[in-house]
Image (cartoon, rainbow, N blue to C red):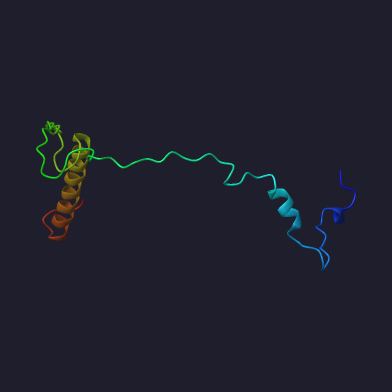
Length: 107
């Protein structure tokens, strides 16, 4: 494709040459603002759209859906797991306390 990588490097312009002349040639084909059609003028509304402050609006308020079974923000499965872990925690702490007070002894 390219025999020499030096062919790919940009050449530096001469001192008398305009470095932006090539870009001006590329921009010559672009349309100008005079070529574009005029946009239609939109007049503001004479009356405001929608209700104004203080107007009576009849809105049906939907009842809130009931979330049954959500105690403490947990589902039934989460409460069951919490109950099991609390039971095991109290059982282990109780056994440790009984061993520390010499109420029970290990064989």
